[in-house]
Image 1 (cartoon, rainbow, N blue to C red):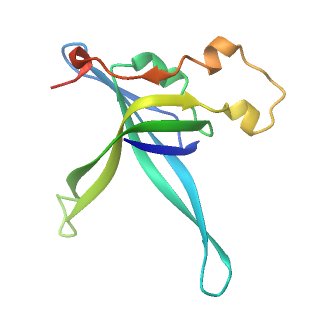
Image 2 (cartoon, helix red, strand yellow; image 1 turned 120 degrees about the vertical axis):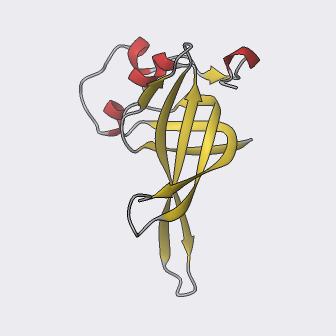
Image 3 (spheres, rainbow, N blue to C red; image 1 turned 90 degrees about the vertical axis):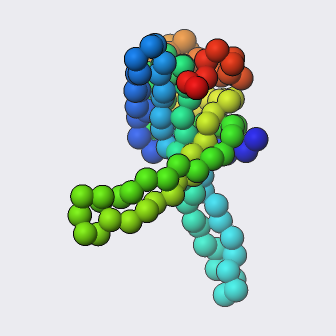
Length: 137
């Protein structure tokens, strides 16, 4: 299991399949930093593509700017980019299948908004585990 903490880069997407299965996908960015040989601080963002199976109600809560902690299984997805052009190339993407999700704050708190939404709409219960019946395969 791998754990990442970061902000959502854009609102989550929902894709529903035949048979009632669904997937919520989103990307978070985790800011990593280090001091280089010239003693300068270098910040490097690390983007993590995330997916949550059969939790379609979460899509309304996962909004750009929210701070999350996600834990799950890290895998690789491969595809051909620009396959219909002469610039086609194979691309590999790391993807986290989320097993646990923790909301650390909301977009409104992050951006200093005075508007306070209802707790039920911004802080749903943490997602933990996945039943074997929930898996798409």
